[in-house]
Image (cartoon, rainbow, N blue to C red):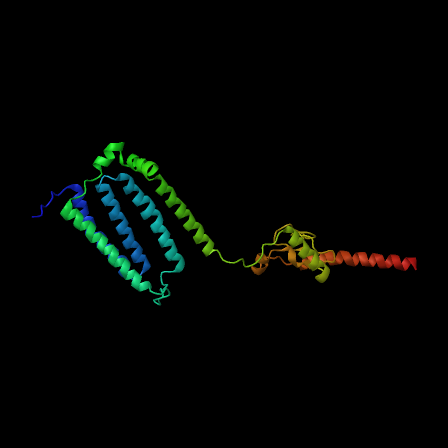
Length: 272
């Protein structure tokens, strides 16, 4: 005859959270929208954190909330927002035998869960973490003692594996260069080549307000012959129509050059 244990705090938390976690886990798979699946995953993670707290594991409780629910789940949501919530996954099997091995993995995981539950029910329930925490003065201290003494090699191997996986993901996601990055010597050589072939001056563009009646950024520069230097004003201002009228500026400069030509002609006439 199976003896029904007394209803304690940790057992009450398990009875309440476990069915909800199972339903939410099923919802992760069955929900059609990725956002709803992410919300179901958040519920599973919060329920698991509650179970950690009920089993006297405050460190795992805090890590479960901060790291998994607060960081990794937010990363999932960011990816969903990047790819779009309306994106549909392809149902075409790209990997040969993918469905078969998926079913095998599901059956193996189900068998492990059934064995663990049957062992806890028929052999003996878990003793809890009270004794383990008492040996080292607390849950965080006990975990630190195990990780950095008995399982330090496994911890370092896991960290190396995670770093290798992160580097591999970056290498695989890194695409080819669209174009070669040009440095200052290459840019200078191109400017000289344009000057030799097209006559474009290799120096900097004229500043705004040069030979103009104002030094406003929207006032174009005037060349010595009175024409407007088109490259002296930003293209953004030009497209927005913020460039001031230059007729007055051009007229004043043109009149000055006409006076210079007239005086020059008079001097040539006197010499003749």
